[in-house]
Amino acid sequence: MLLILGQKVKTVIAIALPLQVILVKWIGSYPEIVERYYSNGIYPPISRLLRVVFGWIPFSIGDIFYSILVLLAIRYCYRNWKSIKKKPIMLLKDIVVAFSIVYFAFHLLWGMNYYRLPITDKLGIEKEYTTEQLAGFTAYLVEKTNQYQFEITGDSTDAVTIPYSREEIFQMTEEGYSILKKQYPNFEYKSPSLKASLFSLPLTYMGYGGYLNPFSNEAQVNGITPLFRLPTVSGHEVGHQLGYAAEDVTNFIGFLVTVTNEDPYFKYAAYHHSLGYCLSDLKRRDEATFKEVVETLHPGVKKNFKEIADFWERYKNPLEPVFKSIFNTFLKANNQEEGIKSYSSVVGLLISYHNKNGF
Image (tube, rainbow, N blue to C red; front, side, top):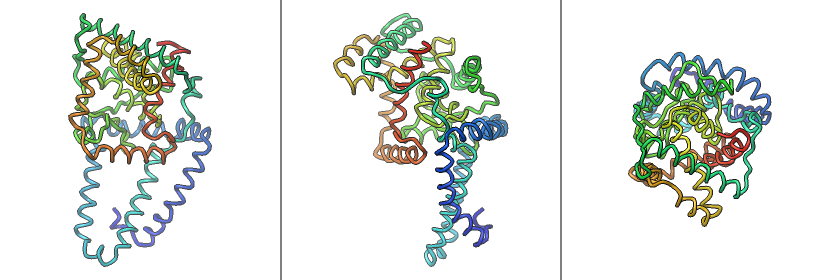
């Protein structure tokens, strides 16, 4: 694509990059405007159109698109290596041009959602909570997780194994959104596009459970993640599709849509996942209480925690922290001040929502 652009056009596009950055930050400083005119204005039809176009295809078009781009970049460098060595500034210019185009497409197709109003305003909840509230809520989650573990297995020592296929979990996630929209119409999910990523193995080595492709609007999950974790991960990625960019918010939505499902395996998955976040937070704040709470967990529940830990441990590698650092920087550059730590900020949303509405 860059090869067919004239030098004057490339110059204009390159100069447009800093102007775009300024414009995005300026518009983003008015979240009410972003919420009204982008997140609830032009974004929903864009998202719906992309899901209609790509959602019916059983594999990830976005992943293939990324692969083609990488191959084209390699081909470009190979074919133009001599001119690149003579005039490296031309390569730099092409990189800036490419980045300018990607920056524009990213924010038009999805990225402006990073600057919308926080979900706390919509649901009338907050993030702040005390250690006492955390301890009480964690004990509640232990009770619910133990309850469904025993209901499913009939033995407190057995780990839960979800009997559904990945495709069945995707379908049940869609059904969960159908239930949730009755209470929250903004969570209506039409023309689904929920798939396993073709890059599931690389995602695992990078430490990711999934991602939303902003250019094809495909919600993609890590297909080799243990199945009992997939319901909340699937709900999380669909939350991104619906225009919620903040990671704590989509973690919250992932929990809400999964726990809303009447299926006991889904309820167990929801309580178990949120319990993990709360236990980690409680350990940081009050280790003595944390140890007391952990003692009340059924052995089967602990086995599922170990299953997750062992899974990620198998793929641990020296590059994982690098990828996490890059993603952390990306989040901070997109109005997420907490960066990758924002995933854990879901705890406050869960506590506040539970105190107000229960679940």
